[in-house]
Length: 210
Image (cartoon, rainbow, N blue to C red):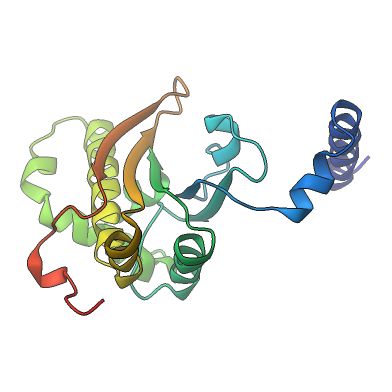
């Protein structure tokens, strides 16, 4: 059996198992989507949001891209963010990176990688800001992992800079923004940064007419 057909077979087995356990499972899912969380994670296939958090379908709204970025010109991410905050009214947004991230590692080099250069430049900006700290680390993997943490922190800040989040903070006192890093070696998530609703950031980024 071709590998892609195995995916379809696994799907049928999973659906049958769910129905056997709970005949109304899919009926409830189709009528309601009220996730408490928005997950912005890396596209890496080893970091599936539902799997590593133990959440079920319908419990976590997911957006993934290379190196879990929050880029102010990315209409895909902004559309997901707006829907999650304004329609689904999520209470928490999680930016989750992972140690050893290939996108972060690539951003620390001078290699010309084609179209992804434009995306990785956003990570290079984070490296530039924290270059003194990162370059003082002797071991390459440790340098990469520290930039992974700093990149997550910067993406949390980028969320706080959006009018979408600031408007929800002002009207509803939500969402809480969390920065996490997942360790592939042991499967454990490490919280590294967070911003609570209404926390102040640099005033130049705070809107006064929301």
